[in-house]
Image 1 (cartoon, protein in one colour):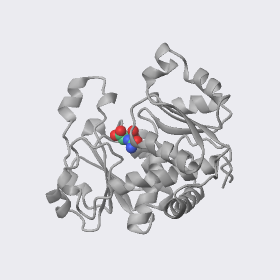
Image 2: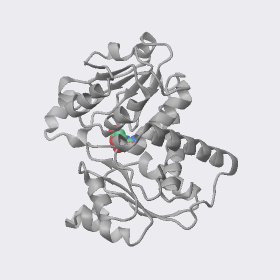
Image 3: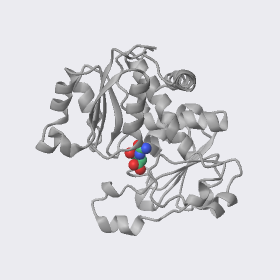
Image 4: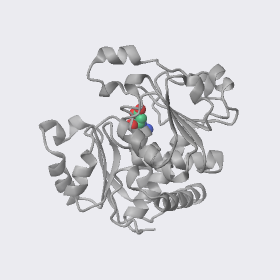
Length: 308
Ligand code: NCD
């Protein structure tokens, strides 16, 4: 299926073939960057980068991808510098920006908000994170990293640790990996921050065994250990955050007690859930993971504009 004009809203919308094609194109983009640094593939393309929530990696790697492909960007880097602060609806923002650009990349706090914008805009919309919903481009770069580090996406035991309730990256990762027959998902969280039921049910429907635990030692038997930050900004009650922060801290000793070949991923930013003494271990792949975001986002931009 062609990607031209397609919205990228949720990892649940992507088939196995879609994902493999995106990863293939990402490899080509990595080659372009390694060999030539830049290309003029998208020199006629203008991209709106609307970030109405904080971001370092997602926004900067999209902007890097845009620059490396010779495209141009118009950027909103915070909600308070846009008309969102005046109460403008997402649909109105989308209908306006749609008349300016060829692609819209958006991050905003409302779950389902990217879909609202996609319904209002003709240009393809790429979801850069919709509140506690989805973060599909992160999941794709996670898969790109897993494939590179482990040599395969198939038959892996994958542990997701931390705030699985509000963490959109793990929601998307669960769906993105599902077509590759994971042998097990280990969802490791405090009870209150466990993976939402609708996702666990969807995974079980796809015949993926799901283990729910709050014991990090159980999670460290996995091939892929995906750490996440407790999502402070999503808590209604700050005292709940205070009680739950610091629930899991992965340190060198814990890593050494777990499965020898595990790779450790984290979408970043980290707060204190991975101690810095882990960073030098060969298992620690999270900064390599962040770098891979550029290639995957280059591929997505080129695909939705019909350039590849
Ligand atoms: C994540 C996000 O924004 O959901 N960050 C990212 O995009 N790399 C994870 C997080 O903020 O904890």
